[in-house]
Length: 172
Image 1: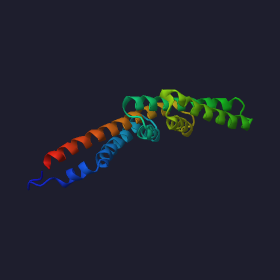
Image 2: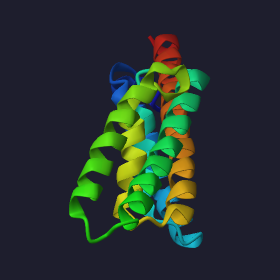
Image 3: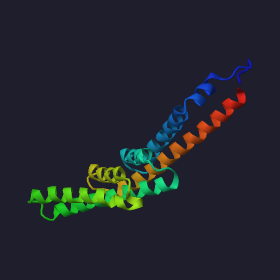
Image 4: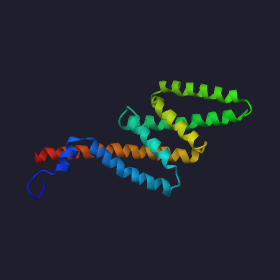
């Protein structure tokens, strides 16, 4: 309520629009991630890929978190297989292409296992590793921390949305 006994319009808007709380918590935690990435000398973009993987995963809660974590990490591993496998005979370009095709096939096939069933997570982990020129030691913690930040963004946004909705109902 405002000082005039009216319901705060921002509270009403936030309660009616469930995206507002998620946008707010995502913005605040994105700023915090940006600071953390610089502070710990991690690639910030890789953290945002971990965060994005969480938002894209269709599974909720701990099950989705573990699936996303496992697929991101498997993608990092698969990228290393391609990088090191291709380096065995760098003069034979066809080997690199064949290795990429075989590994991409295996990345999709691993999805028959429950914890590896989020194929986009696997490709996100691999792409992040390629983008970092194979520097898995910096990409891996950034992906994992980004995943944690994504989980915190979505969880805190849902929590805030529920609180605002309850407050709005009380005011009505």
